[in-house]
Length: 156
Figure 1 (tube, rainbow, N blue to C red):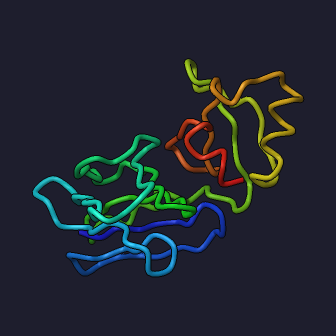
Figure 2: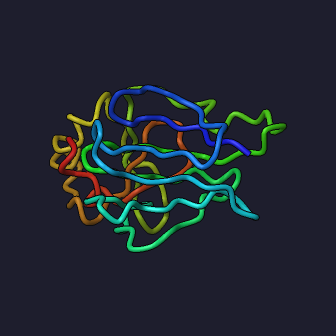
């Protein structure tokens, strides 16, 4: 089992292959520990960590990163999208990812509303399409998971 990740604000990509693995938030700030689990990777927040969320919801206990299912992990001012994979799985879950593009989605139908050239353009897109941040999901272009805009709007 391994975890591939993308830092959504810088486009940096990485891979974790040895577990348990400690991942810090911003620099040396406590973050999370990734542990092998029977059915994926268990994400365990450090009890000293602040502002850790999984798919837009504050982490109060551990969460499971299921194989083949991309998920968002926020630690302070860092936003990662990560996917657990079996080592033999050659499927590229982020094959269509294009940094720094982002897509805005309608939350009930998941219809794409618009694509912006960078996260900094999201506020202008909300005005242009007469949308409230509360009524919008977002994702880096080409990523199949979405996150509520309100959960990450302060990062842009």
